Image 1 (cartoon, one colour):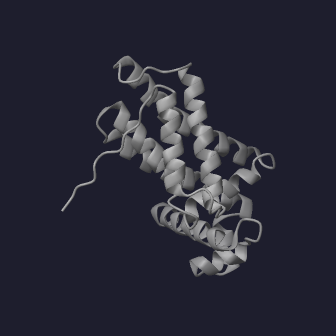
Image 2 (tube, one colour):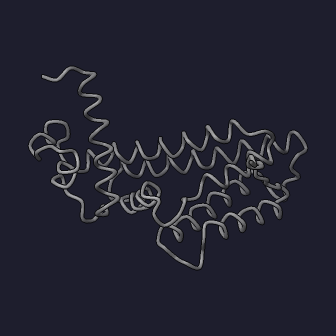
Image 3 (tube, one colour):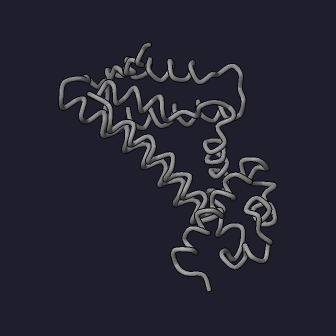
Length: 206
């Protein structure tokens, strides 16, 4: 029997294999055999760790949410002032482009909501993390008089999440009419209209 730490590492490898295989084939076409092939295992060996594909996908879904959420929160926490934090939250919350495999996969996972209570909870978890990022920034900005919110902060935060999700879906779907730059610009415009100007830190030159 594998040791606990070895099992943990193996599960981490299998989750990554599931994310990679799903990004390549899509969730609708994905099978346990696809994940096993990506991991370099037999299907039987994979079944030692996971009873079925859904149990593996639940963990992969949770890992994807953790990765995306942690990366953004780390970037935001390192910024100076509410306006810069908001600019970075907007910047880092969108996909990098149509080929952003992890973000595309997270949107695909949304399709599973309603078919599984576990996936429902994960979709809600990601939404709460998105909402919390914007809410905390807006509240800090209002308290510091950096922002003059036009409306209630919970509503403004909810609109940021809605815009982020809507534009992000268009981006990963390959809609050439909505580029990443255009989406950032539109969300920053909304931020200004809501009394919460967002700025990006200057990139080092030279």
